Image 1 (cartoon, one colour):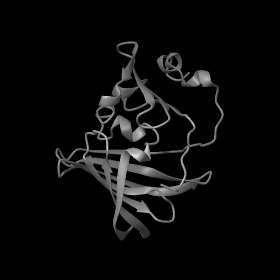
Image 2 (cartoon, one colour):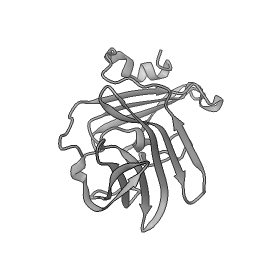
Image 3 (cartoon, one colour):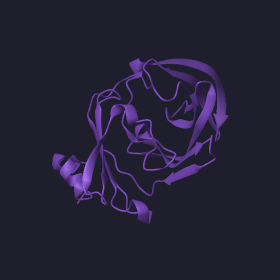
Image 4 (tube, one colour):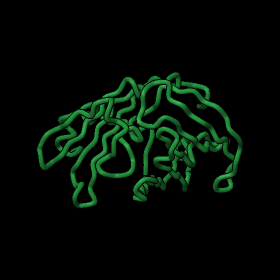
Length: 193
């Protein structure tokens, strides 16, 4: 939304160390856009890597209230229409309140997003399914890391069940240099080692 597009491949490797039921479960992303990306998950109890089909990327991320898509890389902005609804203040930050409507079939038929005007980062998102609010996301403790506004507290609540998942970042690094071999299915099986 900042006026430019990044065509770099986004590669992400996540390996859980806790809670105990997710220990060594892994997730690998190779992403250009939502429509052009590959996602894989590794489950140590099955000792196999499973590809996450594009049609399942709105599904629950390892039983949490987040979806695979929430971690899946940059969206193709051409696949959405945008409309500014109003301006509001969230956490003492002026925000644009945007209505975002997917042009392609998605689980969520509409989003309402509070985007901080000075940072261009989401502070809140409401996800709608056929007119009903399905889940809400709140993103706080925004810090500037290597020039990138980054929320360190992420909360997602399923409004149908009342269940909530909180994700807290301890640290993050951008512009790092790792060998391409780290972002492979083989590395995913070895729990990122």
